[in-house]
Image 1 (cartoon, rainbow, N blue to C red):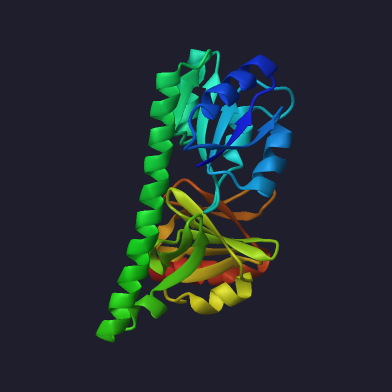
Image 2: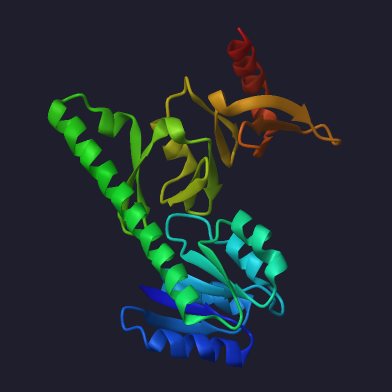
Amino acid sequence: MRILIVDDERLASRRLEVLLARRPQYEIAGVARDGDEAMEMIAALRPDVVLLDIHMPGTDGLLVSRQLNGPDAPAVIFVTAYSHHAAEAFEEAAVDYLLKPVKPERLDTALARARSLLRLQDAQSRIGELETVIDALRGNGTGADDALWVKGREGMVRVPKRTIDWVEAEGDYVRLHCRDRSWLHRDTLTAMESLLDERMFMRVHRSAIVNKQRITMSSTTEHGGRLVHLDNGQIVRVGRSYEGALRTALSQIAD
């Protein structure tokens, strides 16, 4: 596994470098001194794991971890001198939480957990590929019609369309929000709209498509804008030109 160390304290990062150097199964991808440098190095180096300090000047470790979403996001292991951040760290889906000075045996445990997570993600990707092949061999076509293939960390991942909560435009890409994960997919929102069943999905904004089955309520803002609330707690803004179609869709759902 390729590991990025992020810590503004030179002695702390040096200790991690020494510990990792004694473990030839791991490679140090680089060392970042603050959160902003960490984000740049993660994008450029694409490490498998980030050993991430929490208290740093500028962008702290918790803010960095919140930006690491998507199929290529590395596994995060927090490394800090403060135990009271543990609950918040695990809310950010951290693999583990290490206290300084890091003990060798705890580092081994944390990295083993990260390796298990990466292997699980790879296995899920391969299962998706096999399911699609089996569907094709059976001739039922479900692999092509009912799922999308997106690029994940270890290869292509099959994402069933029914699991998509909503789709968000993000530059030249779209982000597929699926419960506890999101996937960055190279496509336009208009192209994605044509691939999704209009009986299940609808466009509510020039930059958003939602799964109608995930909508729990609609509300208005103090300025008269409209919002839709999804059952995962996500709130999506509705464009004015889409409000009529939304009212029609909601009335059909109610019926």
